[in-house]
Structures are given as C-alpha cells and as structure tokens.
Length: 394
Ligand SMILES: Cc1ncc(COP(=O)(O)O)c(C=O)c1O
Image (cartoon, rainbow, N blue to C red; front, side, top):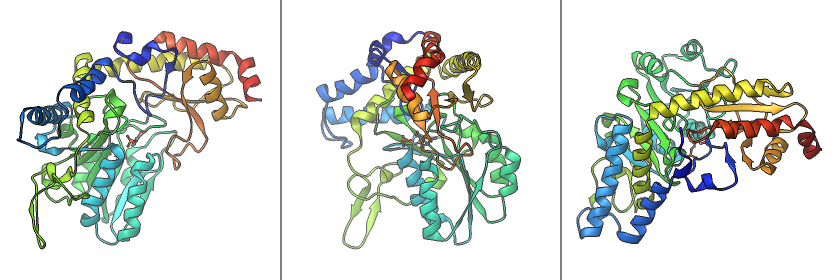
C-alpha cells in the first residue's frame, strides 16, 4: 500500500510507529482545513449568508460521511465532540447519570483506557453504583468471564472494541446479543477500532459508540459520539449555551433538535471539515484493504522480532495493530529513547491503561496502513544492535 507521497510527515526523516496515539495527516486533509480558513472562514449559523451556508453544508457532509462510515440509521445519531474521551464523558454523565439507580452494576474490563474507566469511577461515587471489572487472560478478554460477571443488577457494559495496549479485539456483536437479552446497554470505545476495521453499528447493535478523528488521518479536536436515536432522546445535554437551544426565558429552556442540543457553542469547524476529507481518503483506500495490509505488516513484524532472542513479545495472539515488547534488562523508557536516537517513534510506559493485566511497562509499536516493510526492517536493525542499546541504557 504505497501512500508515501500523501503525507508531508512521510518526507521527514522519521519512522512513525505511534499510530495508536495519533496518526499522520495527509496533504488533502491539511489543504481542506486551509481552504476553510482561506476561502469561507465563517461560523455555522444555519442560514445567514453564502459562506456561512457553505460551512453548514460542509459540516453536514462530514456528519453524513460518518453516518455512512459506521452505517448508522440516521445522521442525527452522529454527534460531534472533542475526542473519544469527551464522547465517553458525555455518554456517562449525559445518559447514565440519570439512567442508573443506586445499587446498579457496570461491567468494564481492567484493560480499558483511562477514558473508559475514570468517568465511570466518578459516576459510581456520585450514584453509589458498583463497577465490576473483568480481567483478561493472556491479554485477551474471554466472553465466558464476562458472562460470569453479569447479575440482575448489571445495567451497562462498556468496552473497547480493540484495546490500545495489547490490541485485544472483542466480539462486540456477540457481547451486544448477550447484553440485550439481559436488558443491559453496551457502550463501545471504538478509538482503536474505527481507524482499522469496518464498523457497522446496526449489525453490532451497539447502543453507544465513541471514536476520535485524529486516530484516522483527521485533525485533533474532533470526536464522534454515536447513540441510538431512541437513547439520545433520553440523553440530557452535558454542556449548555449557544446553538443547543431553540428558545429560553428565565423559567424555561427549549432544547434544539438532536444532535444540535448536544453540540453547544462554536464547533471545531475546521476540524470537522478536515475529518470529512479524512473519511473520503480512507474510503478511497478501502477500510478492508487497510485492515488486511496491517495484518500482514504485524505478522511480518512479529516474525522478525521473534528472531531476536532478547526481545520479549507480549501480545502475539492479539489482532489489533499494536505489538508490545521489551528488551531483556532494559527499561522500556530507555528503549523508547534509544529508538528515538534512530529516528523511530514508539511509545513506552503503560499507555493510559494503568489497570491492565499486563502491569509491566512496555514499548508499543503501533502500525497504520502507511507503514512499510522497509520501516519494519529498519526498526529490527536498530533492535538487533544489542551493543548500542545497552550502551545507551547504561
Ligand atoms: C482505547 C482508547 N480509548 C480512548 C482513547 C482516548 O482518545 P482521545 O485521547 O482521542 O480522547 C484512546 C486514546 O489513545 C484509546 O486508545
């Protein structure tokens, strides 16, 4: 998959393997954002003058694009937020704060990103509800362990479709089936899945789903909150102000339609417009092609890493696009900095998942479709230079 010429950052002298944190931005997304600032830089007013109409049309285009990208039933089910974290907080405090009753139970996995744990923790204190954690076995969540945690008090299960450290891919469709039979709602953190695989919210039957534009070639500062329309009708706005009301006086507030009631204030207009372009770009490459290419790249990376006896690989059997490793006798932070001296960007530490089953710090190599076999060879060469690694670390 040759997309080298599509990205300005690909022309710099670095190898970027930190795609689970954020992704590179193609020229066309950057140009689209510049075009907004240069040619029609207005606010979205829904009906005043031409360049403002253009802004409304572009935002609407992105909403429609996201709707099709995840196969939502209607575009009103797509709410623009700041990022996955903002979407999850809005779901937790806009919907579940009212929905849950004292004594109810929430199921999470201990491998979740902080953004899918901390809002629930605060909610559990506010509402006196209980969080029940499911642990992974060998980096994977097993559905039978999840089922064992379900009681008649369980009201919601919130899980990453693919985790950000191990890349554990969960069978969300089956989980939704089981949950719905037990009157349990399912929230899906799709931050690490939407960029890498086809998502069909109708097929999954997910109740809520969240992801970020910046992890899929889009700009920072834009996220998506998907919710089933019937549930969004019960959700209470989390932020109040302009754009989210139809009318108000001292005693009453008339909310705007869904989704606008959840998008108070001036949105990240340039970001949303750039995100629409990022989706077009991904669609042209084909999400299935992206998934396939990353699968081959990961397989190759693992095969080459296995040839280095002092490299420990933690998540061979997972399906996401991350590989987590350590080098015997070297702290992960030092290994990350050593690779940086070779122009290779990886992430070290706990990767915002402090309760994960793998409690060790690791180096995470996270791939995206624009990574190449040559880049992997270069990484492997740096890792094979044991003398330099140990000299650097000591
Ligand atoms: C699984 C998962 N959930 C949530 C987030 C939070 O995403 P954001 O920082 O874009 O809000 C991340 C970011 O790495 C993630 O990997």
